[in-house]
Every structure is written in C-alpha cells, then in structure tokens.
Length: 106
Image (tube, rainbow, N blue to C red):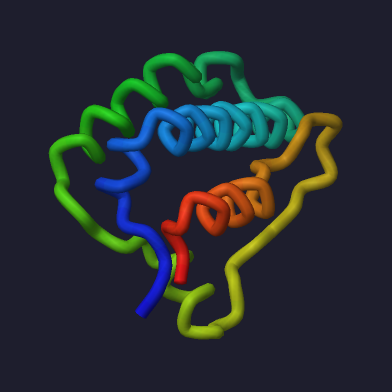
C-alpha cells in the first residue's frame, strides 16, 4: 500500500502546518489564475475561509487516501499542472520528503 492518510496529516502538528502552507499556495495560484484572465474581484478566493473550511471538513472525515496520493503510490501518471504565475507553487517535494522523514510513507 503506502502513502499517508489524511487523519495522520491533520493529527500531526508539523504535517498540518505543511498542509496549511500548501492550501495557502493553492489559493494564491487560483487567485493568480483569476487575475490573469482579469476576472471580477468578487470571484477571488478567501484564503482564511478556504483553509478553515477544508480543515473543518477533513478533521471530521476520518482516514482516507487522497486520489493524487493513490496515483503516486500506484505509479499512475500524476495530474500536475504548474502554472507560470509569479508565486510559489505547492511544495509537493517538501511534503513527500517530510512524510518520508517521519516514517509516514512506505
């Protein structure tokens, strides 16, 4: 099997902080994408609200494996699109290395 379920991410302070950073960067990328097409400002994503809502939902879901993690573990092609915005992209490699160092990935 392998990988790490979401209950372990939200239950570990270091992994939760890393997940928070990733969520913030994803929201920033979404807003940059909206800006690139001159979308109305009312469509912008509220970072704090999104992060809070996603953790509230995930905290109560119990353990599950996200589909991208399943794809990675099973050697399937990953759905990764890296936009060319002037913001940092999610630190996927940092997350993987951190999980490896914590023994959460096999």
